[in-house]
Amino acid sequence: MSGRKFKWHLAKYDGPKSRLTCPNCGRPHCFTPYVDENNVPADATRYGRCDHESSCGYCKYPPSEPFREGRYFSARRKFEKRPLRTNPAHKTKPCTIPEDIVAKSVVFTSKNAFLSFLSHVFGEQTARSMMELYRIGTTKKGYTVFYQIDAAGRIRTGKIIPYDPNTGHRIKDGSVPEAMWVHSHLKALHQLPGDWELTQCLFGEHLLALYPDKTVALVESEKSAVICAAALPQFIWLATGGKTQLGTKLGVLRGRKVIAYPDVDAYALWNEQLSPLGIDVSDLLEKTATEEERKRKIDLADRIIEERLCGCQRNFDCRTE
Image 1 (cartoon, rainbow, N blue to C red):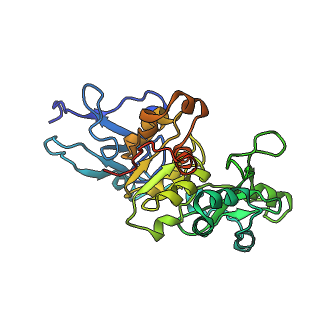
Image 2 (image 1 turned 60 degrees about the vertical axis):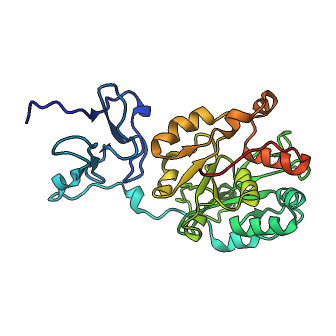
Image 3 (image 1 turned 90 degrees about the vertical axis):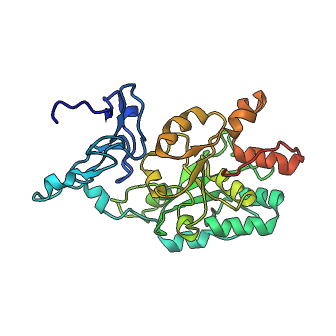
């Protein structure tokens, strides 16, 4: 048996991109997939080995191997007699924003430029329901607060963004910061302890428990998630907070059907990073965007707003089939 050549072998290390997110522990850049002689993976979302042998130990062989077919093996068996070394960060509860601070800000008001724009496009009733669904806050200056609330209902932080009520776009004329953070503001006021540390989650993550059977739709910006939710409520719309803001945030989506809708300039990046995780990446904008739209770097929400305000029928389809 020792001289037998197997069809599958663990992929050779070729930089961080060759190591994927582990399907068991959810940590990024630690999962080595099984590949064939042409370096084609069997199924990069299932078959491979986690580098964290003591704390995770996931290892599943590909099919079509005698004595090995589809077998799950945990390397933790080797370490059963040893105390497991775990990362304290994974055991410590995340730091959070006090609920009373959040509750005071989640009030429907015309001062909030984004909610005003949302009311103009979808009507006040829909704007109110989106505010309540995502718990969108408002600062004293009328800036919009997108709170990051995790699957356990804990408020990790809030992103503060000033918007133009007429266009729904961020104010980028230099008169105000393009984005601020609730935790930074509270730290400056000494309303958070000195050892408070930020750990982010997906925007809208708290909705996963409310709608366990709905397909998850993933976009980049918080604003886009809210607009898409108003137009296409058959999905749970979540936001990563940035093109490259993926990492361990996606671990909470294991076991869910997920479709990603990247901005028009992020299709290649998201397709490369998310497809190996079993996430469907929509090429809707990639196929239909005009040169002018590419220059503007539009996202799905821009297309929805265009149809609502201009009455243009672009025939886009967000079905899961």
